[in-house]
Each structure stands twice: as structure tokens, then as C-alpha cells.
Length: 137
Image (cartoon, rainbow, N blue to C red; front, side, top):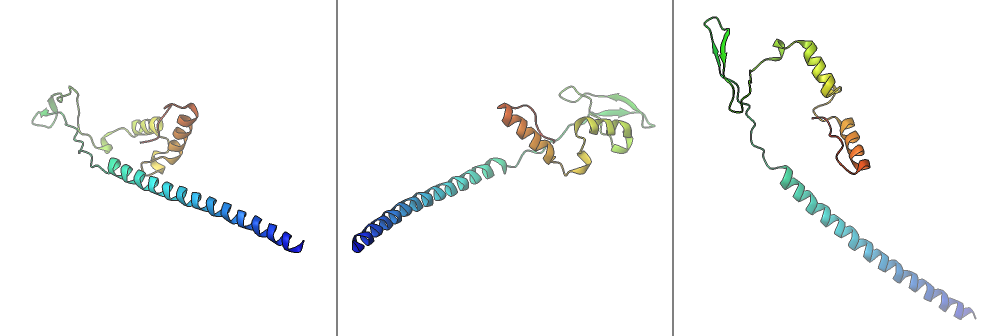
């Protein structure tokens, strides 16, 4: 009976090896397919988001001034808006503080992308299955 036990053990081992080889082969194909898919996705995203955007030029209103520099008349822009160039030092600091507090409380602590706001927006959009809010600009 000793040789029969060995034969049974060898047959079980062979079945396990075949099963493991099949699982390994499927896993290899899945990993390869996932890598190819991710590579193609990366190429598509690079093509979509790396397209140079046209330069934005906000047309300023034409200002006619008196000799002493006071504005005499301000013309509207083509889209019928008044756009007067102003430097930050000519704006009331309280207005700037109020605007920043209203728009983005952490404006001065990040480099243009508020990670906390982006994560909050992603979470709320994902949990509600629709666009609820956006992140900071």
C-alpha cells in the first residue's frame, strides 16, 4: 500500500501544480491587460489635458482722461462691461479679505489647488452620484 499512497500523493501534487499554473497564467494576462489599459488611459489623458489652451485676454475699457489724469469717460468693452485695470494696492484690504474668506478660506496656504476642498468635493459628488460641488480654483 505504500506505493499506492505515493501515487495518490503524486497525482494530487500534479493537479495542484496544474491548477496553480492555470491561475498564474490568468493572473499574468490580467496584469498585462491592466497595464496596457492604464498605459492607453495615460496616453489619452495626456493628449486631452496637454493641449495648449488659448491665451485669455481680458479686454480693458478705454478710459478718456482729463489733463490732470481724472477719468472723463469710460467706454464699455465689446461684451458691454466696464473693465478697469486696478493694482492690488488700490483695493481696500478689507474687501480683499472678505472676498478671500467668501471664496477660499485657505487661499493663502495652498499653491492654487486646495487638496482638502478637492477631496471634499470628490467625496460629496461620489456619495450623491451627481455633481454637488467643486474644489477650489
